[in-house]
Image (cartoon, rainbow, N blue to C red; front, side, top):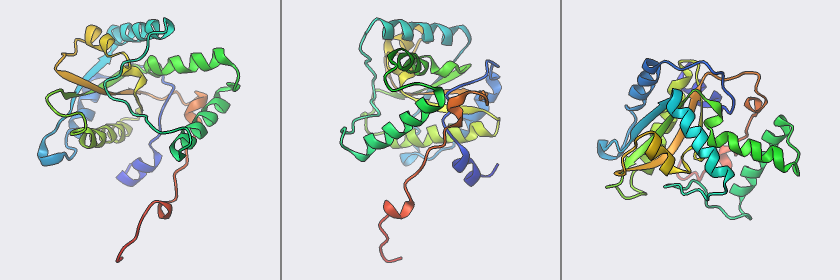
Length: 223
């Protein structure tokens, strides 16, 4: 698979087979992604890779807090758009498509709640990569670089027939990760990536999202 094909075909996978991902495969993916560019080669990223019993305990603890109504306390928020913005419109369009595929009616609170829980358990992926940065850095400083390395991870995963889902729900209870995955307080928890072999029969994996035509968001000047 060439780079352009990988960029075009990568999609968020929200249902996985239970087959474990070999540690060496994950290591190779992170090694390749570690070649990503960063400001002045600062490489402001670190990773915690979870699987097996550790990931299962994190899932259970996340769900326990969610069901107890404990408010999330993520260390980095990925949302912040107003309800009247085009960004909110795109979010709603995605949700409608997913709910249609999953047979979730708009007013079915029970099914909506069960769908929400899937994110907090990493969509049942056999492994998860928690992306970290050092707290000595200002929050905004490494985010562009971290976004680049996250995309690199997701693209490299395709070479091994793996799917990924970049998701913040898996790290919305950072105290869970610090306790159960032994993540030091000196590290900021930025994002989670569910990773595993896609379940091709899982309905939500059939979603096909759209993109804004490039000429609608590009200013051409002198070219």
